[in-house]
Picture 1: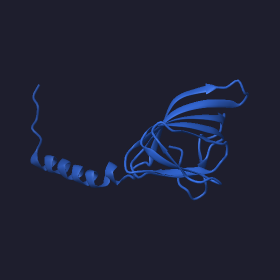
Picture 2: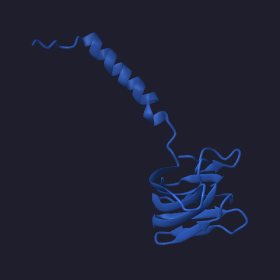
Picture 3: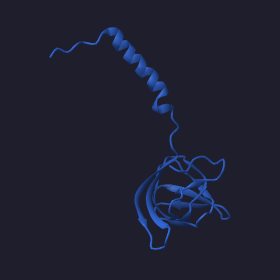
Length: 143
């Protein structure tokens, strides 16, 4: 088998394409404020309800828009510090080892400090509904 050596013009075109792609490729996309990785979903004995367990990772400086869940959220902070802002309550600063509870349908959001943060969250939700719903004008929280 004979391998051809790429022609200089083709090599230049490839290099130019990579420069353009690098300038307008993945770095041009906004970085997600957080990622939610679903670890487990189980039906509950209560008809129409399910438990969803997720690991949620927040980037440094993340701002989480105000949103609701179609059920309760129970969380445990694994790493970092977060400010939880629940409508009708004073903001609470949570650090590794702290837990929290947000009532079904309660509007809440928050922000992260200058370091990554991780939470183990359990949602006891109505089946067939989105896990999270943004308050109008607050951005996407479905991540």
